[in-house]
Length: 291
Ligand code: SAM
Image (cartoon, rainbow, N blue to C red; front, side, top):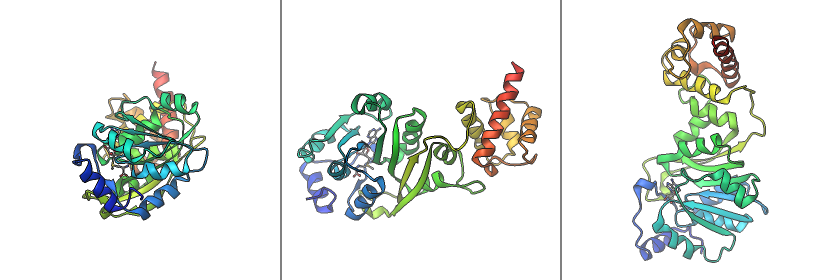
């Protein structure tokens, strides 16, 4: 029987005396159709190595193991490890690691377990740590073909957002710099046990082989992006010149904006990714000239 069936989940919870850990964002998936959607969206094929973050009681792991050649699943809650071992005892291609994914060196793990070849990440992410996990996968350059992720609906919308919208921000630009995002399914809150207070969505991030814009200094590019959105209501000029990281005077910020061909009073939220790239190149030149 599939673990995703609600009766099966209830049976496992009762049998193992599991109390849901809110601090670990434990909301287990209990809807088979949603499980099928995430597995289809992840496009798992024979030969694939899957990294699952937060397997819970093994609901998605079981389905992933049927399609992938190998699955490594990282679970923080030590109380779930014996439950996972029992539930997945028939799945020889699954390995469970008891660890906090934020503290693991995932690049090293991919090197050791998959010879450094890109993996597919699949996860029903804990809400409390969604953005840090996604950013760390990208920033640490974990070799990754794609990530199929269940996240809070609003977070998925922020990742997809385009310039000039309320939800557009640093997360949208980071995700779109590293990947092509698309929402594969919208998932109501009643598909989980316990039921969360928010709705979810399955978002697939397909890694770019080459970023859509070319920047000399990625750190500077992201510092410019962060500065622009930290002070969302300010003009871009004020936001850039008040950033401690960029160390630009008002005049230098104004010059950079002008040189980038942007209106003097523009706000950061109006810039697309290429305009941010152009601006960060100009700011880089200004900083180098000052040295
Ligand atoms: N995959 C299961 C499912 O779909 O039913 C469980 C998903 S639940 C939303 C999130 C899971 O991530 C929980 O099992 C939780 O214990 C685990 N988790 C939370 N924080 C974690 C972390 N920092 N590292 C690894 N696993 C974590």
